[in-house]
Image 1 (cartoon, one colour):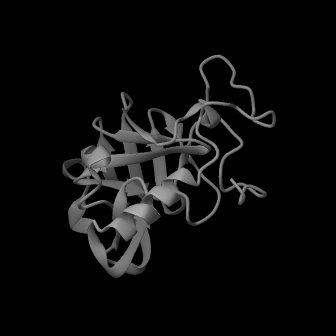
Image 2: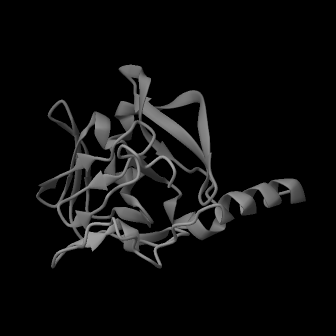
Length: 184
């Protein structure tokens, strides 16, 4: 990576003021058995998920995994990453020409159902930055477009089309993406 790209990357990483070290006064106090997204760190961390993760579309199971990883990042509900061997990959195809860039993970590519290529339902990092190498060959799914479950809990989607956090009963917010959070 050339110096100019490295400088831009470092500037993007340094631009975050919320880093999980201090919970703001407006954050909801977690009850016993809950976690506040305001306590999640930045840079993000990967956590192994001990519960079963299911993703369904029109009553068809496309993910059934005991091997998921959750990415925890300040202000956002976890994003769940599923290994490709636990996904019905024959139902999906890469969306040509669609990509984005994360200052922590690198370049993302997007996936859609073969039957409906107009809407991305998942993304992945084919060559993530070294710190997030564990995400290689995993896909993350948008709960806005699917029925997602962690254990027995049905997931509520994080607000907005850009974010894809999975809100479960064990989390407190407020969450990035909710109305009035654009400055976080």
